[in-house]
Length: 510
Image (tube, rainbow, N blue to C red):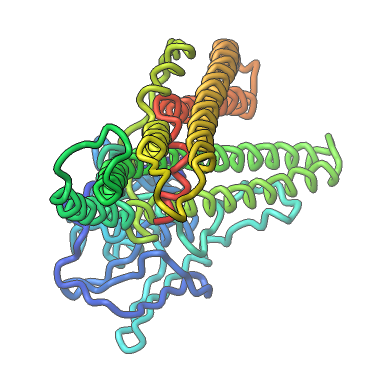
């Protein structure tokens, strides 16, 4: 049987040109395969009198394996010595290079490729029955042999795992980081509230300014001084509202960057988990062969079988983590929880050369948080300058002086927090760069070892398992490097605007 384990859970991309089925009928269509009722993320549909079923879910349950060629927009499925190919939107498929006419064109709905039911029997030789009354599809291929139980100690090849609930790996949409930020800002209630607050504060400022004829240099007429202090406070509120809206958008920008890159990392985790399953299955086969030839004991087979089970559980967890990562980003950008899409922007490594001292200086002069603190100091000093000693019941002058000191301390505290954040982020980036350099150095050796294993295999000095494991080390290191680059990419944004990282938690909750 040909294996496409690597591609089985790779990130697959499909255009949305055929995402909507014309005239498709909704309704519960039950699928029973070899006596087991199946569950799919995209249910079968009836379109133009043709029953369409999810290709991946059905084919995998019958022991076939599936891969997707994004450039050619072609699906390939294989089982034993049979290879099937289908192009999206075409009514013509191929079995071992021979054309097969389909009852309807292949289509996509909710990220799943749908094919005519009759193609299942045409391609895999399975028995297929459609009961219109109960809207039930019954498929059986048990006569050709059932899947091998991985818990048995048989040395027969392992069948492909049967997926009871299929996982969406076909995408009918794509998303860039820039578009994700635009969607998040457009969907944010905090941004909408901020825009209304600016309009409101502007109207209040305009009304308050009507009674201000001059700017007092010192305490004078109490009513005029009070009016001017009120105007100064209103003006600060207006400017602060505009600044706060800028900060909200910057926090959203950072939060989307963080979630976008984490989603990339979770996709890598799924790919690696799938590769580790195939590695464990290959080792199990070797253990079974050795046991059957009295070169090892049942214990070794049992251990290898347990490893397959553990790796399958790890893959399920990786899938759930990926689903959670999608849901988290979808919540921020206003997508439905179940919506899936291809991420178009993958960070590229470049050495971080920013000077930390220069950045500290830039942050301290451009931070909105510091600007707000400094404005509060100015307001407190204005109240002190316009203090009227003759007004009964006034706050003691010494207390007003302390208000100035408190505002100054608050400003100094904000500056220290941001300076510390910049230095911490800088050190974290440099630490990740060191890890990246180590991985790159290891990759040189891993690739060399993989090349050597392939050459040895070609002359009979290495096994297929040794070649696979050598390539697995390369792929693992490559994806670890990609994860580090994603983390660095997020930290670079935080380095430029550390206040955005501090405010992202609040922004993401809105």
